[in-house]
Length: 225
Image (cartoon, rainbow, N blue to C red; front, side):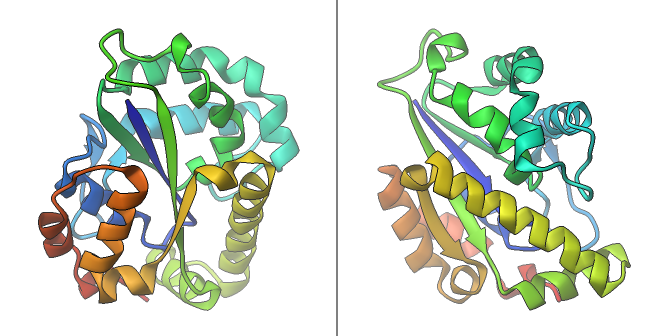
């Protein structure tokens, strides 16, 4: 069983990657958040993980655009355990599955430890050993801020503050245990040469995905400023 989690700040291409993974054959959820402003082809966010992230963020005293600190997220790990395990049990699939919700970049400090102990949540018919993979999406900070301002109609200073907090969480996670499980993808490279990038992703996952179908779904219109 392979678990694939897409991480990255809002407006960094996480939806583009999640959509590509979906079209390549990775189960990204039964109930996905559909199209919206700035994501006309769909968000590909598993609604159950949106709910889970809300629970973790609220326990830590924050929400998506006012993220708690790394330490505050880690402090609620035990309180969040029932919700985390319940969601993993309900959403995990026996072969290859995953999810994408940008706020997971904040909550991953609480979720990651349980991904490493699948005996508490893995399906009884899981195929092979359990493996965890992170696909980390990157984009120029100035482009993230500009895109966030346009979509959410917020001031650049606020957009920059939110972006910096997400990137701090992401870097902290990669430095404190997540790094060995991750592949890094730049949004620009994905939209410019999707076939090449998705081939690299499939090699990292050791997954025989439909790269042609995934690459066909990705297009430059997915990148908004």
